[in-house]
Length: 333
Ligand code: G3H
Ligand code: 13P
Ligand code: ZN
Image (tube, rainbow, N blue to C red):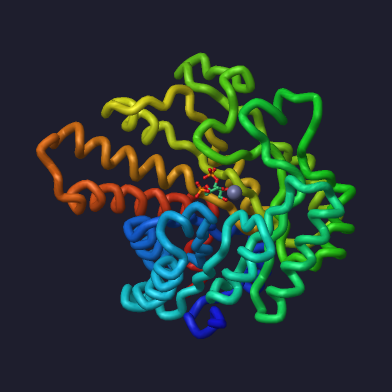
């Protein structure tokens, strides 16, 4: 059993309380490799932004959970070396799907876990979430739960059947589970194809797809039910057109990729939404930079020569999100 406190990590409790009060959101960036982690830490150290480092089950399988945990511990030390005196870094399990996985992360030094039982029937979601909360809270590890189903490309926005979080359920759910934050469904979804072209309109000037707005009325109703309770938005990549264009220009094929417009995320960050999850944008930046090097220098075979530019572009992306979208810069001096 390793306590996250020994590793210099923090849980989300204070982070979220400050974010709600201050009208900004904490970035939750996924990482799977060293370059992503370096870029995240550099961006956060430079902007003095608190950060949630997210590890998915897939990341654990890809990179090895032991290595990832030591990398997170290394991130704290690296942040200090970069001149960030009091790094506010949380190590979080993203989309935990079982009690055993959550327990293993708590025991291994994570400071926060998500139990995503949103696909289970309501009462089963409550029972599993409660079990994880009871275990995690013994070690001061915070727990994110999810209620409502994130939209798939085909459903939600165009569907008559809504999977949005039901505002009438949130008080019962939060009270009975004791969770520390709640991921909700208001129209965001995972990946680089968040909406089909049919769900969007086209900007007559640029010909680009314009996605339908998020369901801010549902968010408002949830906040009314649970005043001051930390809300989380998954699936919040914006799918920057410049990266999609770069990928397509250098031999990739991402037709009609579309994300959540940044102005909508800016609006959400000012509300009780205090954690915004971004993974796909980083993947796009990485891929765009690597493709560019491969296309322009076909003789290059030193991974540092293409992973380095990828790291630089991701760092630029993270800083942009922190400063221009989430407003978390300068909140962890
Ligand atoms: O929510 C999903 C995250 O983007 C992690 O994705 O399961 O492919 O690592 P992954
Ligand atoms: P994106 O696919 O929009 O980056 O969402 C990431 C996420 O929600 C991780 O949990
Ligand atoms: Zn997610």
